[in-house]
Image (cartoon, helix red, strand yellow):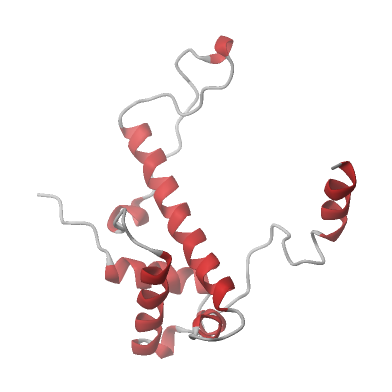
Length: 143
């Protein structure tokens, strides 16, 4: 087990898994997402990662808005968290991915957006994906 951890730590940068901003464009992701392409699985994984991150941030925002403790660790630390709370993310308040959305829904949504908005595909993939998802699943307007 220890060998596997050491090996992964050594190979991490070579595998392109370093914690640096991605320079992948929306066009690169579009190419990955084409049906039958060898990187289609990577496309679905990327899109699912974005969707899961959005859902996690929104769940955290809801907990913060409800004034719930953000983190509980050990029994001693179960008292109310009094640290300053980061502000909620206003950009994600417009995006409401339905709970029953499948990975294939994410892929087809991205492909449709990319087909109809090719001039924007030179932008970073994460931004293009968020725009595609926001266009497909906007949150209902609050009264």
